[in-house]
Image (cartoon, rainbow, N blue to C red):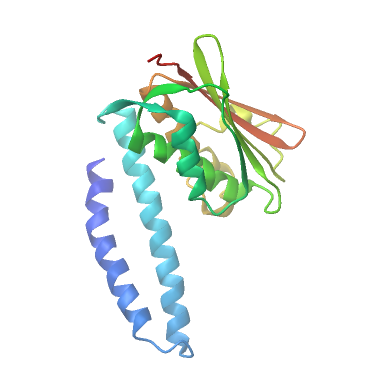
Amino acid sequence: TNLSHDLRTPLTSMIGYIGLIKQNTDEKDKNYEYAKIVQKSSLRLENLIDNLFMYSKLISNDINMKLVTVDINIFLTQIIELQRINISFKPAKNKIFLKIDIDKFQRIMDNLFENIRKYGISDDIALIQVIENSEDVDIVVSNKTKEELTDKIELLTNRLYVGNVERKNGSSGLGLSIVSELTKHMNGRISIEFKNHCFILKLTFPQNYK
């Protein structure tokens, strides 16, 4: 955790200077292309370090959860409206209140959206549903994928699985691990299915009745 934190400061400085170099270089100059490559790699490294920092804090229980009660239908609507991917949202018929940490829940959804961008079929529409059960609530995220996940579902939330085995799309293998750990810290649970070339992830939280 300390190491990942210490890496942030010099990297932030590097990204700032790379941006200045790119800004002050003619686009026709070959150095502009070099600066773009370095900038892209640096931003990827920043994301990897951020994931490492978050995951380290989660598994060491060194993280504060600020749980507040929110209407999850309204909250998800606001989050989805900001995305640049095709998403169909089906809220629950009734008002649904969950006790969550707003920032951490946003992080969960950001990771799931990133997963759709990396592994989903670009022209397909992802589906997010809120389903009310007797005592809890399911938030189901599903999207078609070209990936063959039949024998891999149980491994997907294992830390560094993709990073060690496949190295696909620059993934660290921590995205779904972070989703799983954050969900647990908010008294929820996660389950994953793969059927008919569709990746289905379900987050289940206890309902907070108002």
